[in-house]
Image (spheres, helix red, strand yellow):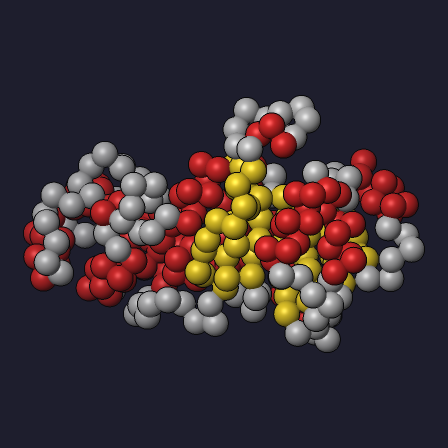
Length: 252
């Protein structure tokens, strides 16, 4: 695990100029490497049983801070503003697999001025997050990730790297957060609503999914798809990010 943690920190390009937020540090294996490389590390840990272990282990580090809370409830903007002396803010973590997507979306939707997010997730999730919109592993979150970031897989982590071994392989992904979204849309709320509704019934055509969700009527949607040069039988996962942007603008 130590070598894996070193690899994660290297891929995140952590330096003394960085404030690093680590979510779910557990016993602190990754934390130890982060503290040697970062300007400051703020760990957010929900499990109260870990607090004494972490505080004891890192009590001699003056660049260590531990917060006992649910990251989904933490005011991250305020936390970052209290540590404004650092050039960059990065998130580096082994994310709990069952809550990966809500955490990543919170980090992106709150527009925290992050430099990057480097996290270990299930391999299947990584493939969906880093897939090019319109590719075979595309899901609704794929479009959100590409809207806000440039994503890539930076490490493959076979399950036998862990003892005991989990049932699935993992991957480390790096999301380079863009200063502005990749495309311009008239209304972000409508843009993300259209994408969410389009994927709610994945085996249906885009028109049927959006009709059933009450986004618009069939005639209007057919007209817009023709104007965009799209097949009327197209499915949501076949659209590019730009095509979803143009469609949402027409529906705004």
